[in-house]
Amino acid sequence: MRSGIVFLTITCVVLWSAPAFSAAILEGERFHPVQGEEGMAVTSHFLASKFALDVLQKGGNAVDAAVTAAFTLAVVQPRSGNIGGGGLMLYSSVRDDRVYAIDYREKAPMAATEKMFQNKAGEVEQDLSRFSHLAAGVPGTVAGLAMALEKFGTISLQEAMQPAITLAENGFLVTPRFSDGLKAREKRLKKWPATRKLFYKENGAFYEPGDRFVQKELAATLRRISANGYREFYEGETAGLIAREMAENGGLITKADMAAYTPVLREPVMGTYRGYDVYSMPPPSSGGAHIVQILNILEGFPMASYGHNSAQTIHLMAEAMKFAYADRSKYLGDEDFVAVPLAGLTSKKYAAKLRRQINAHKAIPSSSISPGAPLPYESGETTHFSIVDRDGNAVSNTYTINFSYGSGVVVGGAGFLLNNEMDDFSAKPGVPNAYGLIGGTANRIEPGKRMLSSMSPTLVKKDGKLVLVTGSPGGSRIITTTLQIIMNLIDHDLNIQSAVSAPRIHHQWLPDELRVEEGLSPDTITLLEAKGHDVVQKSAMGASQSITVKDGVLLGGADPRRTTSLAEGF
Ligand code: DON
Image (cartoon, rainbow, N blue to C red; front, side, top):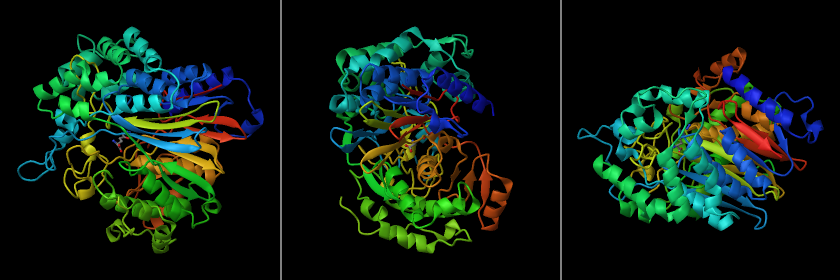
């Protein structure tokens, strides 16, 4: 409730100070989206939104603003914003009439082995894959952002990094969310001297709301990268600091691993849904494949007529989700290492086959679902933000260090956290990762391989025109959260703020539970239970920062589930 009030306050302030664009669109709406005509940035932190908007207002494009936002988030939101992690970006270029996917996911170090997280008895040691130096994959963020800027941007890396450097150098005022996060993870973070020194006061006390938080070492690291170019991170002093941190603490990442890291430009996954074109992330993300697969299954049902979040709608969505997550467990992995049957998984024919198995009245127990046969094989605390510029170019970006504060390990002398993305590999077939996701050999650990992700930066177009920019954090829930934003818009005609704010549901096959957020009516839950679902209400899922384009007006929906979220338009 409190988070809702803070969010609404921020939204109201923004609306109050914003010009009154197309007021008619707002009439009768319950949750007001923020509006803009020339540019919009929606991120999980108001400072990142503000600096991204500044770039757009000065004539920069969506990629310029995205890279600025990403470096800003690395300073002001260290629980997920990062330079020690990796991510995935979609860029829609009006000039090229194309959507590009930039994969800057972390990679396993060359010394990684399939069973590195198993003890002698063959049991998975979760502390190793989550909270040790072994948990870190080779970071891709700096190279990925630099690639985006070089290929598609118009400003220099120095310009894009300047707000972040200033914020690290001079500090910023701590928000309640920043302070609460560090209090909640105190035990885990104080374990490492460099982490303790960075995030807690000299006497070990907490930073409280209103305190100024300064990061001198991070400022120096960012300045080195800005002055020498992004390769500094991979071949210069910063790479040396990472390698030293690893060597002194039993980690695997070497200078050679750092020097060898490269991001990859990939083809997005594409599907259609009720006349709209959906572009999303290909492997090493599972997101695009399964969003398209679930949409394909649901396209055969009159979802709009069942109504938003009705028992029948939720039932059918949950059934479709189960099939997708079962397939994910078997087929998805890094396509540079395994053949992923993408064409099969995203085909309408395969979806029709799965749809026929769905019973409109009864839930199929997960135990009687196993991964299907999507033949033929083809050879072959995360944060999301969405940005659109005055030309209609759009960036949808999700990046992460996996958990809140990643592995908890700060690189000594460099002032930033390392990811614990190695936990996204399947440490042992059939043993779930932190999000309860099961994997098999397609996602086993191999040197130089990228671990499977659920991150799903997504764009939707109609007749070639941009309609939606969306995505979310939330581990395994990313796919279903993003799916629901798309359906809330296309099937249920919600405005973007309502689409983002509405209660969400999630089923991931295993465990066999239908997870729901607060806000579903008790009789909806009773009806779902009568169909055989094990309905469990748990904490909020995802944080989708989204933009729609309607009648030429940009409408932004920031997610109230993150109290610092902000949509900024002009
Ligand atoms: O790549 C993935 O799927 C996960 N590492 C994402 C983690 C995540 O979203 C945590 N945030 N809430």
